[in-house]
Image (cartoon, rainbow, N blue to C red; front, side):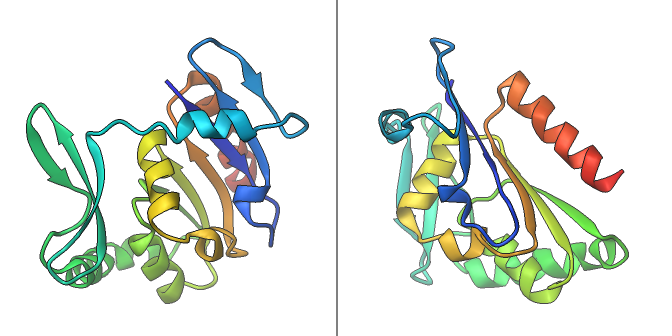
Length: 174
């Protein structure tokens, strides 16, 4: 399993920030190390992960699991799906300072949240490192992920990385 945790400081692009990578062998790399070869390892995305286009010509991702293709977003109208979701969660987001978004996908939901709630602080948890890697290769997410209100981004399910993420979340939120 490959896990990365990107720790961000306000206004910095997370992809240029501290990257912690845990590889199956248990080797670990932090901010002082050359992460180039390690990040190349993440680029070896299984064939079951694919970049596709929805019928409304938006970039989408598909996962083939057990012979069944699942799309990350609607294969017909991504914009409408995001708008319906935003309407459904808006009441829950309205009265909080911090929002935890589980799953980044291609950032469509995050972008909608930031546009509607520009003063909220966001923690993002993407459990699938391959999906994250495919996303940052399919779309330029640097501007979105460097938004000043994103205070945390964690990718992967490694126990230590999750503990660090929860510690940062609870330290910040209280």
